[in-house]
Amino acid sequence: MPNVDILAVHIEQIVTDAGIQIARNYQPDNPVASFAYRTIDVQIIGINTAVSPRRQRFAIAHAYGHLLLHCKRQPLVACHQIRTEQRPAGSSEPTAEMEEQATLHAANLLMPEELLRAELARQVLVPHTSRDQLIERMAAGFEVSNEAMGWRLMSLSLITG
Image 1 (cartoon, rainbow, N blue to C red):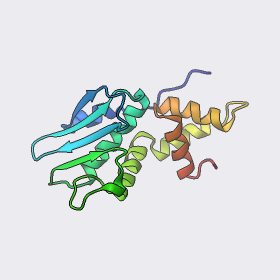
Image 2 (image 1 turned 60 degrees about the vertical axis):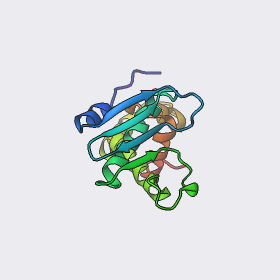
Image 3 (image 1 turned 45 degrees about the vertical axis):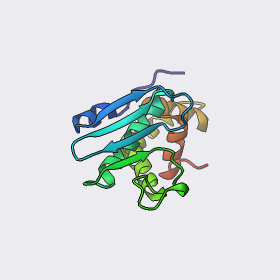
Image 4 (image 1 turned 30 degrees about the vertical axis):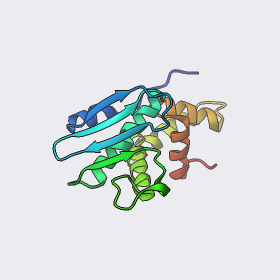
């Protein structure tokens, strides 16, 4: 595989510059990649280090989206991959709509459309590139998972399924 230019957004710097603490914990039996927690005085993003570093980056951006978008003046606990259909009434757990908003926030932040378009134009010039190779190279450059990159490219109609 050829050298890939790193196009990755410095998500941890963005989050810590915003005054949000990042707490890491290794939980191999827990499917939750991240959580966001806020009180009046404290904002914390918790990361499960059992998931891949690329997945951790997306999880941080996702949790950051919850902190920016939801319940700005209220305590909030938001778990990524929570089963929203089991959300109790009055719960601080996110709704399915809130999860979609946080996921879109993460995708926009980590894979900005303008930068994606420019990199895609550069990458398609590489000879003998399959769709999967293209996604893999772009995911490496933006330091996100292949799944996240494929989804983002399809959601912007830059590639087809």
